[in-house]
Image 1 (cartoon, one colour):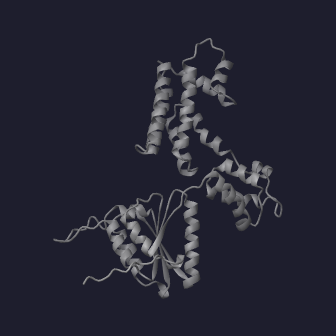
Image 2 (cartoon, helix red, strand yellow):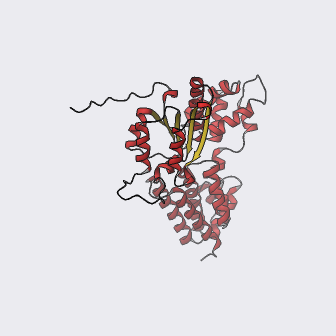
Image 3 (cartoon, rainbow, N blue to C red):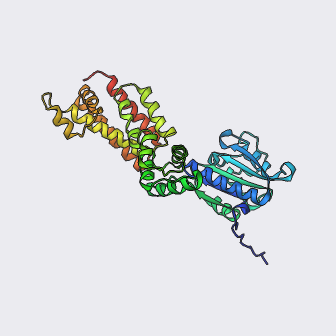
Length: 353
């Protein structure tokens, strides 16, 4: 008679989890969840050892990570083993360069991790962190001995409520809801940046609520202004500056590629309108038609006059096609924007035809 399989119940508390996955594009939430897990382990086990690995380190790392999980820690303390870029750890094979013994069975990184989850060490908690996680059968194995949590950037409404609560609990200050809304409008729903600005605002007038005026005075350019600032680089013809600004928006400001594409399309549309306008057309009528306002209006007008109608039309077509590809998840978003940036640079570097 076959032995009856007994289902493994999921962990009752954070400290019961032996394998944890935190994935998503909001690194600040990953850090907060890591702190919660660590605090739970310390409460249960006292002092713990924390060890860190990077999934980008290459072959053989899987063996090192699991050996660390299975070995006893200093003074037999519980260990928290953290692996960043864990998707890369599971992507490859363990020690791919090592010769395979005759008759040996090839196992992928996910299969090796799946085997570990079947019998994880009681002496360690393995924490896998990454921006992107590919779901599969491994998720079921992890859920039996731990949990997976998605750490995505929240919507604006949640960020406003979070800012009000975070200010009170973490920074021992209060912020008016209107001021919190303005702060989120400035920074977007980036909780890490919001928390950083709250820490500064809380010190301006200790004991007094943070109002709209304090936010306006202390916080820099708005998120929208920062996002659209790339337009000024695109019309210079300097490819290096354009690519550098694009990288700043994506890697430092952590803007989503799709809204950035809107800035490209908007500029291409305005340039196309100016380029195909009649030479004697009223400049004010052009500015009104294409919503050219503020100090940048004249700069865009001059840039548009440098382009021929066909060149401007191709630029607009390329921007629209890039937007369509990004929305359909066809190809790499950053690469697509880099190519579009080079198209702008080429258009302005070449003489008008």
